[in-house]
Image (cartoon, rainbow, N blue to C red; front, side, top):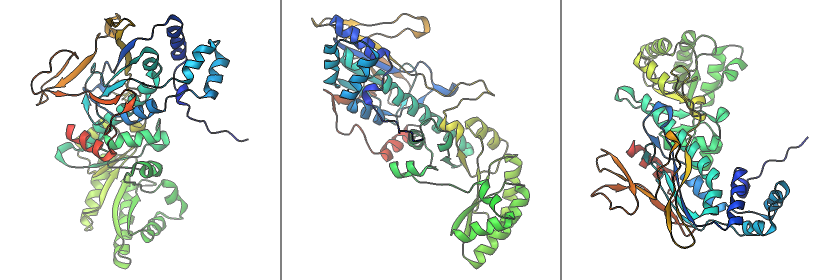
Length: 425
């Protein structure tokens, strides 16, 4: 049985209620210039900030948004829309303006990460695609930045590798956002190829188990590569490190090959890493790094480093790839929860109307807004766009699309985005 791979249909990257709402707008003739704010009400992971990412994917979605004849036939099949409405959709594309935080910016709850102004139907139909792009990337970039920060405890630089592919929500998006957040490399070769990222990896337990003995497995790996990593916890990490040291000294003497690192993926990471470090140092292998992996996140990394773990770098997979919180600490995760709310409208006569939703904690702030940051990060100010800019404050929303066209420089190289993110962090 052959399964057809799913195709990307930008015009169908909406929820059902978007074309339904556009149809009501069309029938009533209400399609004035409208502004929507995209923002979050809270910061993820019980934290205080967001590391903004996903703008490039969001803009690519906007540029690609069209309805093909095939998609219009599908809409006509599932809903009895007027044929003239479908004719309008056939010619619909984005003609408006978008302002946004640059990728790699730090933002805070209730600050519009993106401000979209366009005829109502255009702006509304983009909602879900924009939210999906910003929600996932910002969640993962923020998670990565927290994990990388935890790994720097004590002022020491410890690299974090992203190992999330097999459990990631969207592997390529996760790899890209993790790199923005500070991860040094990815295990996913497709992401390394697509984004020109450093690719790193060790060996699986299955390779160790392939050989009759652990020593034979270690010798085969040492013979294969000039620089290599050995996995210690297939059977007994404290026995394995002595085997690894023997193999490393022999391969260094006879082949000139170097043991670069050993990995601990389970067990008592604190006690075992301390023991492994002691044995490596005694054998004159002080340059061999200890890599820890296995269901790690920012809280577990902090915990084991505070307990004195002798770890030089980390590989983080599941919690990073899923943007997970912590069940132990009752901290939520898994989704960012950004929203897209109408805040301003201009009718056909040119009359302007601020728009507001009254719903307790979910109430919205009306009006077109700007966000300005104090030069020394003492505060951000959210104010209406027509109000004067505070002296020496930095404007955070930057124009990225105007009249439906991309503004040059709106999608800088990933290396520049990462550099901006690290400076801001």
